[in-house]
Length: 159
Length: 155
Image 1 (cartoon, one colour):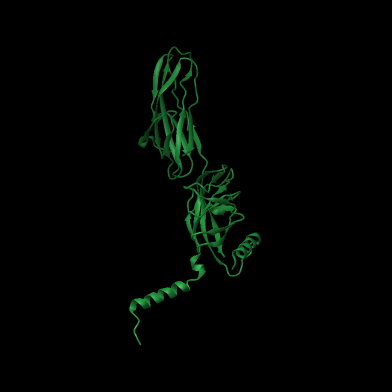
Image 2 (image 1 turned 30 degrees about the vertical axis):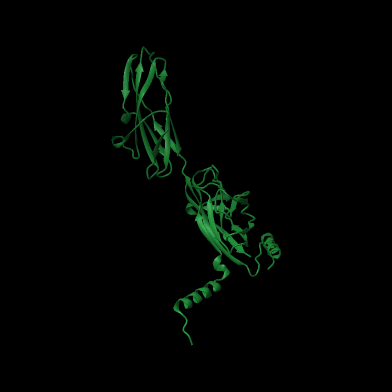
């Protein structure tokens, strides 16, 4: 068959979607694949120092400190980072942060965690859970009596 | 009558087999790579480019040399996930690419919705494919798939 005629037939086939007698035809398939991740959620309980004298240094260990519970997709790697206050108010400073992490809700078997603003990689459990505990040291120096608080923010994102 | 040497008989048989090979047997579409979106967040659309070596889909095709070929796709509009939940999948623009050199870095883009006509010089080529997924804000978590068929017609 002349090439010009062939080409005309092909263009016709493309335009009309019809097939032409005498052609060879075959097909093959690939897949498109995606995994939709569950939305991440974080809940927590406060890191409470209780009563403190106007001038005092008081430490709360991570295991008995504030907690975060992260939930998301099973076995997903995540990045965690903290936004930490330097004080809870005038003359009430906070620092020397400590942390623990575990995929089950058990501080006794948890691993050490660096509590800082630098992102760290962790992995959610087979049921999509992650538990964090944080502690710190509070230092008061002639602080005015009253209640003090400041937010501790945990940011979690999928890697 | 003289006997035909054994080697000669074998050659003749092979020649007959080759001559009898139908054109259809020389036309193949082979799956090489899936279009891989990886992890996707609900409410956040994600695009795979046909030039992305780690995520683009790929078919390798075999045709008779110098044949005119017509490439068309059967494109799904959704991916299917857990419990038959669907997620929109689209192929807008020139999200397919033809490569006579079978190289992801050397493609001629075309729309997979309309297909393309090419002439394969040495009878081997690759077709690359990208696409875009658009999960809903409340898209159910889990694995999603869709089947994308390339139909190759040789003239």
